[in-house]
Amino acid sequence: MLLLLSLWMFVPEDSNTQYLLDKQIAQYFPEWEVRFDSMTQGLRTSQGCLDVLYWYIDLETRYEVMLSRLLGLRYRNRYLGDYGVHINDHWFEPFFQIRPRLRLLLSITTHYYKGEDEIGAGWFIGGDYTNFLETMVHVEDFDRNFSLKDKPDGIDKRTYRQYPVRFTTTLTRNWIGGRFTARLELTSKYRLQSTEPGNDSLAYCTETGQRRALYARMWQDLGRFTFSGLVDLEQSKLWVRDEGVGTRDERSWELYAEPTFGFRINPRWHATLYLSYNHKSLDESLLFYFPVLDSVFDYERDVYAYLIDATFKPGGRFVWHFGMQRQFYYNNQGKDVLDRRLLLGFEYRYKNIWFYFVEAMEGDFPTPKWLHNHTYVQLMLRF
Image 1: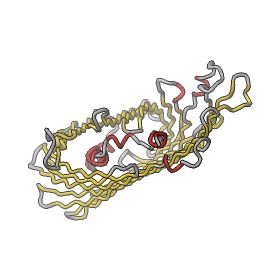
Image 2: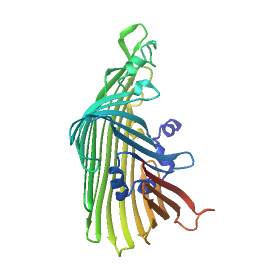
Image 3: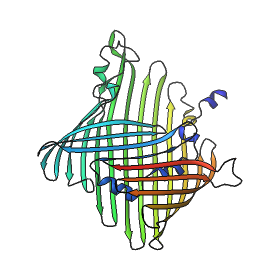
Image 4: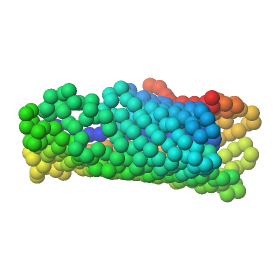
C-alpha cells in the first residue's frame, strides 16, 4: 500500500489549484499584441505569483536592423519560467532581403550548455510583423555529440543517433477591428543512446521522443460587440529503455481553450466575459517492473473558469479594470477545489511605455487573515 501511495502521480501545477485563474490574467490583451506586432525594436513581459515557491515570468525581446540594402540582423530573446516549462533562448538571425516582402533567414541559438545549441534556416514573407508568414526549420541540440566527445562511455554519455528537427510555421494577420495569429510546431522523432564502456555496439540506455504544438488566437469587433477565441494545444511522447531501471513510456496531452465575448456599453465602459477550459492528461508506465500497475501512473485534470472584466476609460492615459474570477478544479488524484477571486487593476499607456498592474483578492468569504491573493504585472517598451 505504501508503495502504491509513493507512486501516485503528481504534477507541479497541483501546488497551485488557481493556475487557470493565473493564466487568464497573465496573457496579453489584444491591443497589447497588436502593439507588439508593430515593433521591430522592443520588449514585453508578463510576471506574477504562482505559489509560495515560484514566479511566473514571460519575457520577449526583439531588435532588428538593416546592415545594408540586402543584409540585415534580427535578434530575439524568449525567457519563460512556468510549471514544467523553462525556456531561455537567444536567436541570432542574419537575413537576406531578397525582395521587398521576402527574406531568407538563418538562425543560431546559444546556451550556457553547448549541447542545447540550435541552428536553423527559413523564410519570411510580409512587409512587417502585423501581416506575415514565417517558416523555420531548426536542428535542436546540434552541438550535443561534440560537447560530450571527451566524456567516457556510460550512462551519463547519451549522444544522438537521430537528431530532433523542429518545423515551425507562424501566420499573423491584422485588419481594422480584427486579428488572427497561429503558430504550428512539429518536432521529428529523436533518438538518444548511451553505450557500455568499451562496447560501442551494446546500448545501455535508449531514449526517443516527439512533440507537437498548436497555438491560435483571433478577435473581431462587430459594432459594440467583440468576439474572440484562443486555443493552445500540446502533445508529446517519450520512451526510455534503461537497463538499470526498466522501460518508461510517457504520453502527455494538454489543451487550453478560451472563447471571449465583449460588449461596449458606452465610450467609457466595456465589459468582457472570458470562458476558459484546461485539460491535461499524463499517461506514464513502467513496463519492466510494474506492468499491472500502469493505471497508478495516469494523471488527468479538468479545470473550468470564467472571468468578468469591466474596464473604465476616463480619458487620458489610464484604463481601470474591475473583475471577478470563478474556477472549478477537478483531477483524478482527489483534488476537487472551487475558488473565487476579485480583481482590481489599471493600465498606464504613454507613448513608448505601456504598464498593467492587477491585484487578485480573495473572493470567498470569510477570507483568511488577508485579502491579497496573487499579483501580476505587465510591461511593454518600444526602443
